[in-house]
Every structure is written in C-alpha cells, then in structure tokens.
Image 1: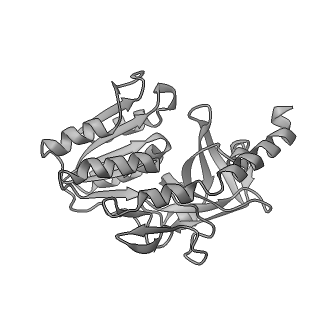
Image 2: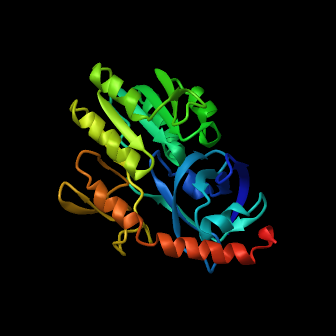
Image 3: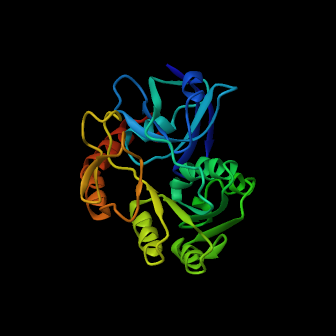
Length: 279
C-alpha cells in the first residue's frame, strides 16, 4: 500500500496527488511514468510523474477524472492509500545538448512538461515554455513554470481568458519561423501534438512528442500500447513514451485511443450512480 501524502484540486476535474514511494523517488527521471492501481479490484492506469523528492521519499502525478478508476482515485484523501504503484517505467526524456528548445504543454500535458522543462533548463538548455489550455480555469502549473529559469513563458488559452488568445501552434510557429529554436517537444492531447509536429515540420525543427496510448501492463508484454512510428510498430511503454513527432502515425493513435471510450463512460456512469459522493 502507498499512502497519499498530498492532494490538490487544480480544476473541476483535474487533481494533483502525491504518494509515499521512497524507492521509486530515488530512481525517477523526467518523462517517465508509473502504473497505479487504486484498489485490489481496480485496473492499472498509467500516469506520468509531475514531480518527486528523493530526499523526502514521495512522487506526484496529475490526473483528470474521466472514467471509473480516476473517479475513484479523486475521492482519496491524505492518509488514505492506493493499492499499487509501479515505476519508474519508460525511457527518460532526452534533456542534454538541446540548445534552444520549445516545450509545449497542453491541458493535463503540462504535468509532464513541467519536470521535462526543469530538467532541460538544469542541463543548460535555453528553454521557452508554451503553456496552453481551453480557458484560465483549466490552466495548470502556471506558477510552477514561472518559477523555472526559462527564456520565456508563453501562456495561450482558446478564449483569451489568460495569456494570449489562440492555439499553442501560433507561438510555436513564430519561434520556428524566426529560427529561435533548435528543438521542440510537445506534450498533451494527441491532436495538439499532431499539429505541433506539423507546424515544426515545415521548418525542419526536430520535434519530440510524449505519447499516451492505451496501456495495460506497462512492461511491453500486452502490446496494447503499440504505435506506428516511421512505419514500424513500437510500444509506448518500453520504447517510449517519447518519439519523433514527425514520424508518428497520429491518426492511428487517436483511433486506438477511442476504442474503449463508450465502455469508459458507461463504467464511470455506473460507479457514479452508486457512489456516496453523488447521493
């Protein structure tokens, strides 16, 4: 069992949670993820590390309440415990010798972008962060990003309620077009990453994306997280989650992400009907 030592609600459906996991905290690196099971009857869900402390022995992650498992997770409080936490999993993000880099974090993807941008800055890169959300209420970790030694922090919202009005691809295009970046990294919804990669492709700016395919075991055995990269089958859990954004088949990725959408909605609805919090 892993005790919950931190919980913060970032928006109506987005939560930050920390659990005591000293052995994991000593090994984790930016870009890696964990597999979590809320209770013994629960499914395994992948969540990327948003922060950690090897000294204090905790790891944090941010999640959106979208289905039964994340709904159950959102009801845990400090002092409660989750059944299983396995990690760190996946290949750490490459952060060395990047020069001038733009890190784009969209929606909950900001949770992954934060430790990645921090690690890149610590490695000597000149980091510009583009942080995006649909509106100000859904914008997360803006203060944490502002505290990093960045070249620039650009905030974008679809409705203009915070920062600039528009999509994250607009400032990314400006940076690429002006020759101000040597590399880009996009982390967020698949559709956002797709268009970030298309934006940089025209300027031949190498672009890394952190993929979030359906995942079951996280160790490469089940094959559920397979993605097509440069025409080859790769596995998000052991080969990724980072891949060349210009080589990913995003249409296949998005199609596979939708396979169990209806079952997810039905399971969450059934859980909500019997949950004491809705009575």
